Image (cartoon, rainbow, N blue to C red):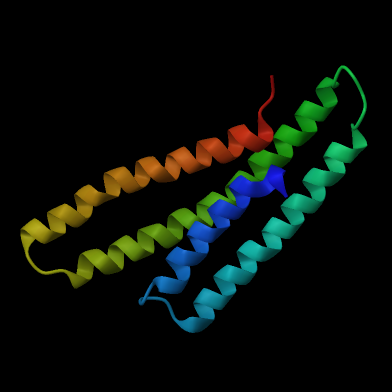
Length: 133
């Protein structure tokens, strides 16, 4: 479990964003939670298989790093592209619901730190699970 703590934190943040959002229908929320649960199961299963295949081999061969990094960066796409679309939808709905130029400007400006946090999580996920020395 310790190896996937970062993944569980990421999933927790995604599930909190999804479940607390009032702009999503309940069936969309369920679909998103099921999607992320399924891809997480697949990610963990295949990552463990790759790790087990190269267990107790020293020095770790380049083929392990290639296979592991390739798998992780594929999963980065499956985790973060849908999340980016979801966040853009949420910001769009938020932007449309507020009144006044100042408030809309503040909503747009809040996208900057949100985008930075998003990119940080994307980098950390890829680096933590797919780093190749």
